[in-house]
Amino acid sequence: MAKRSPWCPLIVVAVALFVSGCGDSGGKDMSNLSGAWQNPSTKQKLSINLSSDKTTIILGDKTLSVTIKPLTSDSYSLLVSDASLGEKEWELSRVWDDNGKSFTLKFEHDGQTETFERVKI
Image (cartoon, rainbow, N blue to C red; front, side, top):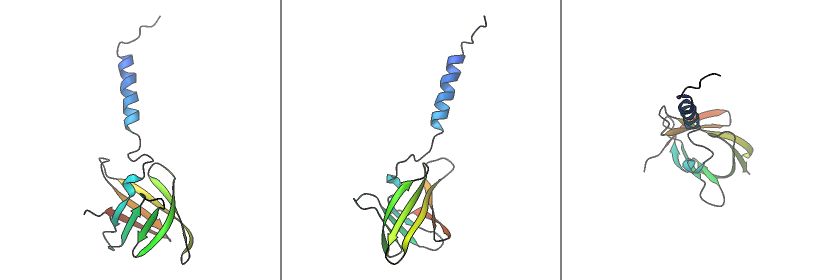
């Protein structure tokens, strides 16, 4: 009969804790998307409001009603229905910094990809 190392249970626990700690940084929590954002190069503004019954984004000076659906833990589909724009599907993704404490938004819409940073008030 083979002898079991006394380190075996400790190794199993360490691996389990490491794997659980390597999960997504944002989860499916969309609350940290709400707020004011700005493209640092173009100064284009984006405001995301998830706190009301009706989810809206303000892009520039246009307020749009959107439906947000999670695609992954950090990517979301924005379904836009607007009289002047028609039906659109855009994508919004969190891009985390190297230490996982803050993020920028990657906003893909109408064939463009923009990066937005949170506006500090």
